[in-house]
Image 1 (spheres, helix red, strand yellow):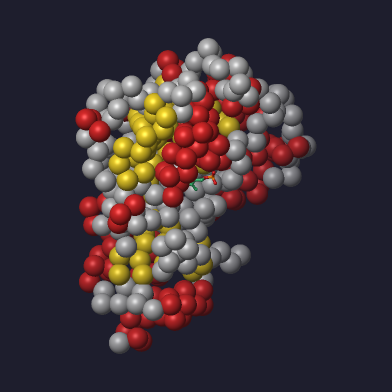
Image 2 (cartoon, helix red, strand yellow):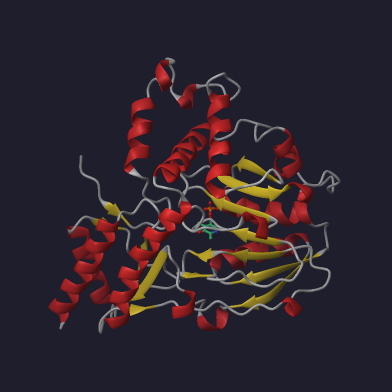
Length: 361
Ligand SMILES: *Cc1c(COP(=O)(O)O)cnc(C)c1O
């Protein structure tokens, strides 16, 4: 069966073994006579699925018992609201590092709830660069500092964590989770939409230090937006996204089968190096992100004219490579090369860039 190299930023490619496993289980999960999509979330079949997904994620990311793992809905975007509502009281000061479009949205949602301060922004460079953050920039009374680990749209990343002193660091890892090794203990809360690097749309993972889960919240906070209720009910306060949790579990096992996050990070480094090395010597293609802040996962680049961009994307499509068009706020091209993108896909892209450059010269 034909499979394309899909460079989409999300929803993105899934590992073939994951799709094959899902296919084998699709109609009758382990011979039980129902698909996972048709079972009660409280059934004897589903409970082990969610428990195994959590246990596998804990092993893969080395998450200690000090943290709760929550499987929620609403995308990473709902966390922009849930985080301030659960970690701060109305009117409290919170701090945001604005490094891209999603970071900005998080900040804007934060402002609905309290005094959300943008302590640093990369807007002057159209987010091609990560601004420097020092502890003295963080307001004394900030309940947390929010950062976006990897900026999916602009192709930049924090190659080292910002120094926020003793403040609680909250991180949107939607586009790097499982692709790069992180020490969970450095964060108060990590969240990620699953559809980029850990499964399919419909699931959001939240990893939160248990002491940050509060029960004395403002009564205005809706039940569905309370971490304490979600944690107390093992993510089953209401019907969880059962199929998405099942798919995420398969992805976590795949990461383990591949040798774990460190092994994947090494491959991801090789993949992104191949692209950046080509970009650095090219006379036609131009990398967007500042060299020191380049993303391992989303490689952004431009061509001199819109006509050339169109012609290049058409050539990619002819060669079974899709979704390389850049986000409208950056233009040009973006190759998202998450865990499931094989090295062969990146090699084919670089060969195609070289062919196109020769043709244009
Ligand atoms: C995609 C993305 C989001 C938005 O995710 P949804 O699940 O669509 O809400 C937020 N932050 C980052 C870094 C992303 O890449």
